[in-house]
Length: 506
Image 1 (tube, rainbow, N blue to C red):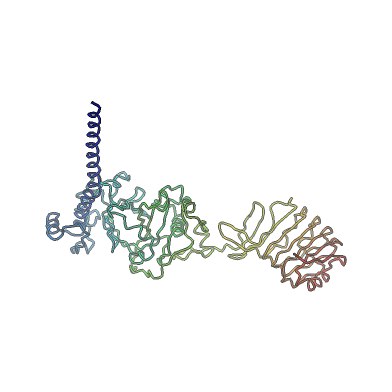
Image 2 (cartoon, rainbow, N blue to C red):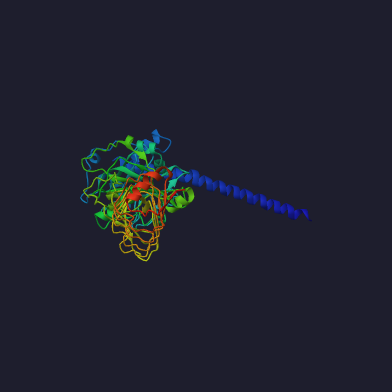
């Protein structure tokens, strides 16, 4: 009696396992064999229609006799295609039969030397219908290449974005697109052909970038944007693209160009998108690209997820105009000229004020807090990711800072202007950085409480008259050991009290 229930249970488990095995087998057979086979046949069918004016029946018959496997076909188009013949609506004749099968077709994309050779669709409502449907509207995990809803070929968008699956299982659609992360792959395939219903066009690749599919994580950069407010808006868009490019492409671009983006999923970080960007060939331009001049860049801008996962720090990232002013743009060939940034003022640490004197140096011009008693002037500052050397100090810097007690100067300031501290009557301690070469006349004139002066520089050659007239009689002066004797003479000639004490700087 007890054995029968166990046998029955084993029988149920065995049958269930068989059905489960068969179900899994059928699932794998369908998704790994049958559906990919169907997808290839569909794409082969419409590829034939696109590349030839022959009827579907004739083409299918020829192919069935000559080929057992579905492979890309390269049939020489007839004379009508070569002449870019169009109908009364301006549609290229080579798309007429494809339109007859599906009016959602918007163009054809091909990257020579790869298997990327497909129709490009767009759902009437601009949605993602073709992410999971084939050209004929059948459910298909391979989907189709399709134009983003923000893109239009009827009223041509400045930027056209084409989406497609990265089909690792079937090697279809945009499976090969992530190969552009390799510079050598780009050098072999630098030009894309994308013909819309209305225009045949070739496109030169200008960028390979990785972005997040969550637009908020791209530092306010929405790569799906199709239309721009003005030229400056588009130039900033180009700057965002070039800032993210893995390598430099030897192809110039400007505000008059049109862009094409090919976007697919990749797996460097969560929700990552690999995007290849190209610009349309200009009128009369040769399609050849000097790919030997391409090189990998070491200051690529990535989404924050990249740095959290792989480490590193985001490079300088501002605006097109700012980067152009600092000579950081080598890909732009438009008419916009960079405006000199010299003279721009920056606030650091909420109160230190600096003025740009060259593309990499600044002058300290004061503080917006006149109540400070202690002040530290750095040798370098960082603004918008750029590092500037502090090499000068303005002559009127301390004219209103009457409560200063202590001042530390670091690094590269070379000259203390005349009368610099004349109004800082409460000053007791000053440390001069290693760059000081000259102290101007009356720089510390009549500072009665100055009791400690440290000179770190070994390059001091000149001190102006009365620079230390009427400083504290018990002032202690710390000097580099190797310069102690020479500096004493300079200081005594500049009215340092005879009762001053000299010590060697540690």
